Image (tube, rainbow over all chains, first blue to last red; front, side):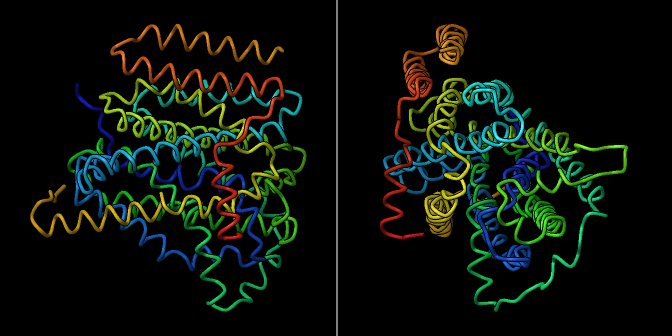
Length: 365
Length: 69
């Protein structure tokens, strides 16, 4: 059976979606770094690029393989299966968490009378349809959604210009570099480490595509977008309100008044961003299916999408029950996700380097 | 109760339109059935407000115990 191919552009779009989706709408609300929160993000750029470089290097050393096949190739079948089981658990719970975040958002600010599970099931239909359409369609959809996110953020920033008070961004920094670096490491697991989701689809990348370009370009696009969103949130809401809001971007959108022409712009913006979130859930579900099909040695991971997506609906109901719980869980998630985002990929990368150096590996692309 | 009915309808559609309709191999069929049934069981319990522990709870306790984030 011929596998669908993922073009470099579509892969980069998936990376952008993974990195921006939750973080635009939830705006790093759990971080209380003060007005210089965006500076921590900029300080961490070398670390984020190092992580992306590691992912890209893995794909470059072992082309035509996804993370599960890479692990099996480097460490053997038994370890490979154990790692696939762990990744399957991580991806499925991650899909549940992301869907849960968006459901909570919709339930809290838009459809408070609609039962939570019903909103989850509505999301399930859309996410499953996108994921079931295949990696190629998913990539194209992500490309479209990246454009949508850009338009939404640009519209928001332009519309809020006269509500923004640049004084809120001051002082730019009142911390030493020693304090800034640990803060910037906080961003490693939450938006950037989740790029590991794409590693489950790298077996579908076109042969001629350069993994370095894909990972670096995707991150290069999403970092300025996140910085702009953070700065806009703080400029419009002020440091205290932005730090204490669960959805600062939505709150910042709700204060926009463009004379008598347009009010309630937040509903349009949040709709666009929800579509972006749906794309990320579809990516996570696809990754989960690839992991499960790797565990059970099935040829077609796409066939598992509907039941696994249904399970993620159940997980989104039981994992994070309230918005407060979600906000508190962020600190735990940073530690929970570290083995999947950094430790296992680093071990696979080192193993792949050793295998390639000893002449047993396959280098190329 | 209405939510439970909706969940059951979704499960029925998944069961008949995907799991039974697309039986390529026995292994694949059983895996699909397992995931769908697990999802249905959790959702049914959640519909009646019966507490179902999160699969991340043990990890959460462990992280809190050792790292105290």
